[in-house]
Length: 335
Image 1 (spheres, helix red, strand yellow):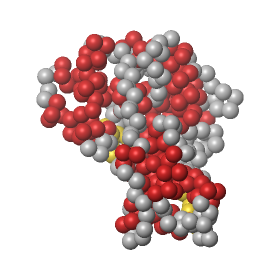
Image 2 (cartoon, helix red, strand yellow):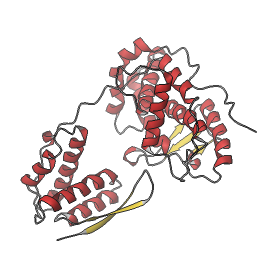
Image 3 (tube, one colour):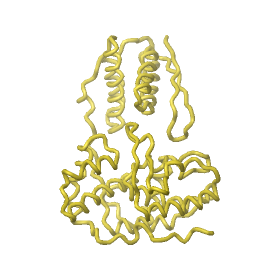
Image 4 (cartoon, helix red, strand yellow):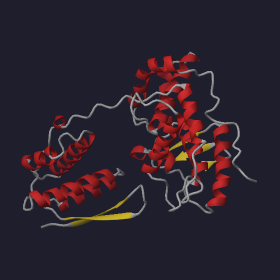
């Protein structure tokens, strides 16, 4: 039986993890992951899913070396009813089968319709009151014994994400060297699909970050990440989501539209920009490419997606007010 090792860097802990593939597909899995890595694509999700597939085959098809329809359907049927998780499993296996087939070997390539993409949830568009309540709640966040910097981190990390429309993982993983306080720009390294970009930021936002940086330097000298956990790593996805959920609960905002996550701040940034352009009488078709580049979208269609949210935004938002979102000063700094 074939076996192989594949090393993948975990983006949460930034430590090297090793999984030893042992099924009859070990060689092909490892070759595919190495090929994706060499092409500059992320392998984290593929590695996790195919490691589970490898274990599944060891248990149920220990002597098989050809990816058949029977194996593919057994693996995917095992995840039926698992929503997006099932879709991800089927999608990863289909990608693996396509790699084998294109390499000139035999493999059953599942039809893309086997696991249709789950319908995306409608993003939550916050009105001005909800946004103000949320950011006021971040100002009430308390530090923990493990990290006394939390009460300073939470108000800044969410305001920065909202002000610049960043993805949650982008704001989490910002390094100190990514901030240029002279030019008021923030460098997003290795964004989605490995697309780097440089964001011009509002002077008020950068001043907020400067104040936070001075405090953080005193508490964690020589840190790598702008928002750094006590472990020396970037904060995890779970930490960011838990902090957001706690602030949402403190804010008193209602939950009838479903659970709100940090990604809502990015959605609200995009729709606010579009609404502002409408109020200014700008041509959206001419402006969309600028917003698309700023947000790091791979295609304009991803940016046009936000336009269908605008009717709700028109009813909810008052763009003539911004008080309570980015405070003028922070009084938590001790000189």
